[in-house]
Structures are given as C-alpha cells and as structure tokens.
Image 1 (tube, one colour):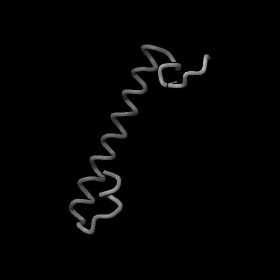
Image 2: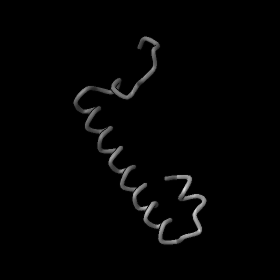
Image 3: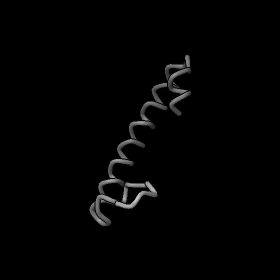
Length: 51
C-alpha cells in the first residue's frame, strides 16, 4: 500500500489508500494498547534475548 501511495498518479487511488493506511495505523494502535493492558509491556518485545 505504501508503494502504491508513493508511486500512483491517480489522485482517487492515492486518497483511498491514504485513508486505508490511516485506518490500519489506528487499528494497530488500539491492538497494541489492548495487548499491553492484558499481557504487559513485554508483549511487544520480539527479541530472543532474555529480559
């Protein structure tokens, strides 16, 4: 989506994809907040290193 957003010459396509990207980012933020509230801060750490 980001590639199409950056390279498209169609203003309608750019607007649609831009709106979709905003919605995805808002969804990600809500998912992260919910995951942290249920499982703690370490839920978003994907390292194999011990804490």
